[in-house]
Length: 307
Image (cartoon, rainbow, N blue to C red; front, side, top):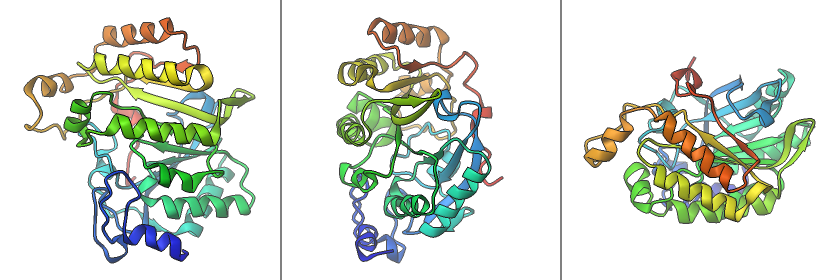
């Protein structure tokens, strides 16, 4: 790794938390990870949007740790408390994993929550491309990203797959300790869109562009409507919007949450609330959108980490 990338880890400001810890010496910030990229699982994954996988599966690479640490995270086994059972991989080794997934028939390389390892991952993509990999690269992130870190991927990423989780600063503060989430995420989205531009498809598969995911949370329809309004007003049908209903109560809800919010999040999403949000999105003229069938709120969609 070159000196520039070493410096990015030794005084870490890769994410908006700005921890400034020296991860090269084992100091840990909010993401909970040192300077070595930790991959828990690589697999052919069929749980993504149809325009990413088609008849094939995405080549998913699941990284451990996360700077956002949502209390309802479905991947909490590896995102909130890194297991140390994953593989510590350098850039060359990561590139080899991508090439293996391509050989297994993957439709794309889906990098899941990699941003706290951004210097290593960016370098690995460059290596894989130099070795002849032909698949599009997908950056699958939580939306709470620094523009300067995203710029490390300029020209390397074909498809951005970010979440837009929260509109209300009160909600994002309670659920992710990130009161500035929406402000930070919208600036990050502008940078992502600058890099990849309007959505472009070939043979039914997305080759360039953005898919923005929003997981509707029980009791927070107001937040969801504001998010749909923002995305349609700002990007319209130049991007895809993926409305998700697969919220599954997780064991990390704690007593510090307001009683009403904790009660809401202790249950699965009301199907009627989800239908209303779909109608709301349609009424705003969004045709590039995905919705989930009832019954998607199941643990079957959560990968078996450390398998």
